[in-house]
Length: 89
Image (cartoon, rainbow, N blue to C red; front, side, top):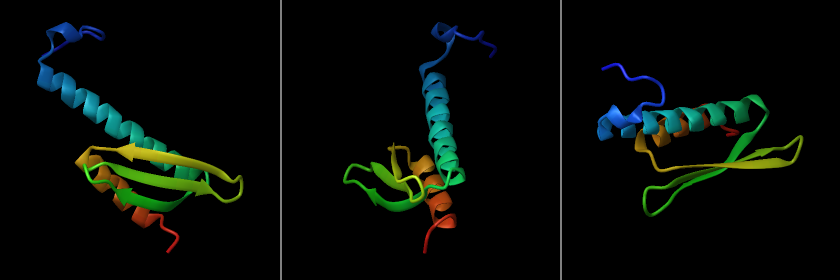
């Protein structure tokens, strides 16, 4: 199916959801990579009761902090892998 940019009215809802989820996943993973590239370290992450994942970051040189929140299981798995690869411990 070919759909012109901005022509979302002709897309099936499942395709719209997939594209939105995929873009959101890529955005959070890109943000995570940017944080690590900018000297941030993950200081804590936690899984909430409803499947929500929160990761807290700090750049110890600039004293800046940031947080990433996700509800997407696939994204959470990828984020945890990246965090573990770049862990302080």
